[in-house]
Image (cartoon, rainbow, N blue to C red; front, top):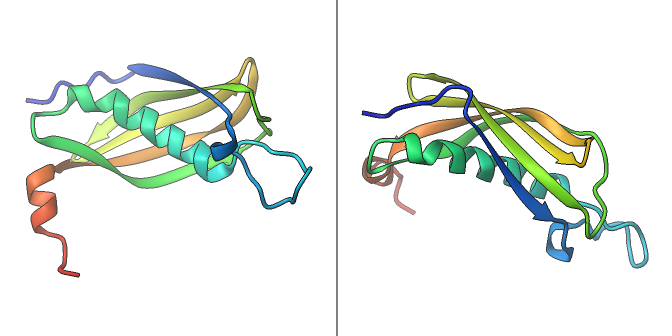
Amino acid sequence: MAAYQIGAVLAQEVTVESEYAITFLGPGAARVLSTPRMIGFMERASRDLVFPMLDPGHDTVGTHVNVYHRKAAPMGAKVVFHAELTAVTGRRAHFKVRALMGEVVVGEGTHERGIIDVAKFGERLPPV
């Protein structure tokens, strides 16, 4: 039986590298952490937090993200992504997520992940 620890927190540090930064402003322009990458790191921290609490054969998939990208994090910056498990309702795990560069809030919001039985999930996918 899954043992959810409401209030549990996980922090993961990432250094902003070229592959995580925007490029669309053109050569020589500011290179900062992209919003999609920020969200991806928030999702990863949330999944990594709850995964050890799940029953064997289960995992989670992202179902909802509601975040603000508040400040730019330049190349080389160290950003710490925090996920806090705030609730589990049925098959939904709810998280508070934050990205911090020192004391500066880079991004914050909420995230929801669906709890799935991995084998059954694959069986329900439509053929392609």
